[in-house]
Image 1 (cartoon, rainbow, N blue to C red):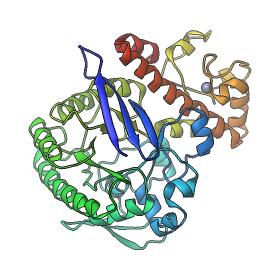
Image 2 (cartoon, helix red, strand yellow; image 1 turned 30 degrees about the vertical axis):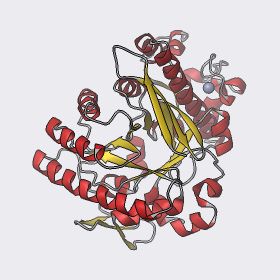
Image 3 (cartoon, helix red, strand yellow; image 1 turned 45 degrees about the horizontal axis):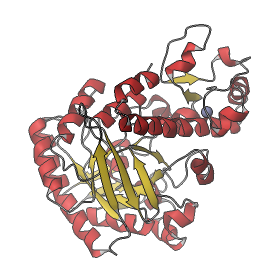
Image 4 (cartoon, rainbow, N blue to C red; image 1 turned 90 degrees about the vertical axis):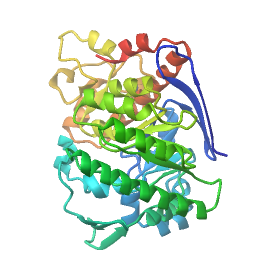
Length: 397
Ligand SMILES: [Zn+2]
């Protein structure tokens, strides 16, 4: 049921086109995975996700473990049945929220704060796993590698992920190395637990660690290559900025087994996606497109900025709250075929935002989801024509 094939059409880069098969359908890669954090894409139904060409979504084990609990999701037909999405799905291990994010306050969401310290809800990490406090009722939970797999088996997504220790930012090499070895031991325990389950209904991803250190990245790649994971995710610290991230992704990718699909965790900016694709990354996920929509932002191509009379600062998105859109009758993007751009003007969305109408968030989310799917489709087409560098210019301001 699970299968992955990829072809590299380029002599100058590692970009590749792939087919990733699951029991719920086949994904054309490179692909973007949207975050349905608590088993819901914020502001959009699974049916309209499909309508805007979405191939795959993910849900967060951490949140669902606390509410409504894995037993209820399982009883209601697993995530697919519970939330009414019949396409491919992924769940993460729950580790990311526990180790580095906490549950995220509204301020953190707006400012996209990166934590250099552990969240307060994390009580203890030891060989066994992590002990943390629920943000809902203060109850103590222990998440072990085995427990994470059991919860993900109950949730029933197609792709599941091993538990790893997400290190805080700015830790030194010796901490990174110890943490890598702990994550490797947890990966082995995750795999053993996974192998006890029903075979063929889910596929397990291992995570490569090693932070920003080339020798550790090599050791970790050898480790995951030698275990029977279906795919790999690039984890660990990717560095402090975009330049360092590019270097780290390159050093992490180089020693990885090319026959397995590779997922880049938590990366979703347009230029970052082009960079990842050029390094051979097959799938990406990030809350960015849907979160941006909730703050009034619409993803746009440089061509949309060219049609603006004033010359505002060109970015990967435009803020529809801006007064310049008050009397603008055009859709967000005249070439966009999404349900929002087909039916509504910038002026209307601007008004909805100002009037705090919920519909604004729905309309912007639809556009951003469509934009990401259109971007990845354009990337796939460009890979097949070996024109990725030319295509990049059409998408990055
Ligand atoms: Zn649109």
